[in-house]
Amino acid sequence: MAFERKLAAVPPHAFTANGTPQGVITVISTAGFYIKQFVNLQSETLQSAGFQVKNVLSNTQLLIGLPNNSLRAPQHPLDLSGYLVADAATIAAPEQDNFPIKPDDHYLSVYLPAPVSADRVIPVDPYGNFYTSCNTFPVNVIPQTGIPFTLGILALPNLIQKYTSGLTYNQVVSETVDGEEILTFNEGSTFVGELTLTKTDIGWILNVGVPEDNFLLLENGDIFLLEDGDGLLLE
Image (tube, rainbow, N blue to C red; front, side, top):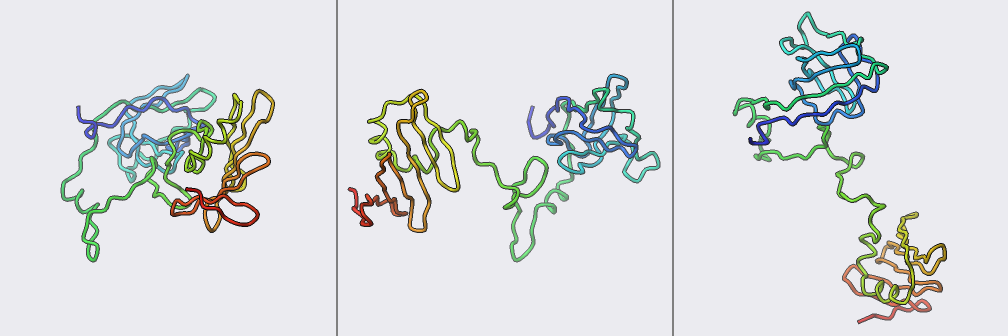
């Protein structure tokens, strides 16, 4: 079975608001639902198969109708007001064939004419929204709380290893405060050491220990030990 020829099954999604007389339902996320997809609705008092997604209205709302009716058909909208949150109403979709389109329609939908003269490949999120400064592309597949060392701290492994090898600790806490990356080392409830990394206009400042030694990492990779305002280049 070719994955691109199938729409994956969608497990039951609980309603977060009652169905409406206009055929609109609300769930926590519409990711995985597509226009023309066949869906099943059920609750403790109602059960029905053979409905179809007519439109994905938002990240949380779907417009549901009958398969043989377009949005302009007299039988539409479909009254779904009987599906209630109090009755544990849900929507789900079985695995099903994808919906083919004509080759010419597919080509025209992705081709951008002159002066670009190229097929468009534009990434979108699971809801079909473009990535922007407000809707950013997810780049960290590991929860931040699960990363003991941030990427900035790992840029100076030798300095960190030299410092931490002199510590006795069994707990490391990582946090970011006002643009500073902070690693705190503890033995039980006792504080034993701290590292901080700060981005500046000229590079990264690494503060090691309490009392601290300050190191400056330049963009070209040079590392300076900062002492009394002077910089000593480390080989």
